[in-house]
Length: 99
Image (cartoon, rainbow, N blue to C red; front, side):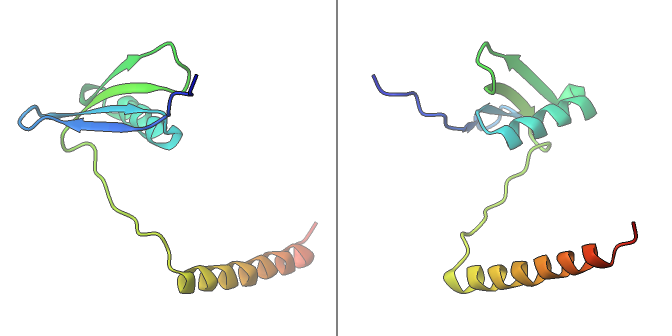
């Protein structure tokens, strides 16, 4: 028996005024729960029995999306070099840190 895929589904019915979210994504789920704490009238959450699964409706205007491109080989190499340099700086700071 195959395992059920844990996917995030986002639905918007034109004119409905809300976005339906069915998600296993921990970061997205935490962001929606935080939004519910900050603005309770903008989010409706239907708790399920599955831990880590969230089914919610969010009013339009309270949820935004952005696209992220995967980095090219050139930018990955540059990020790696910058990270190595930064790690060296942190190591140097630890050695000089007062007790």
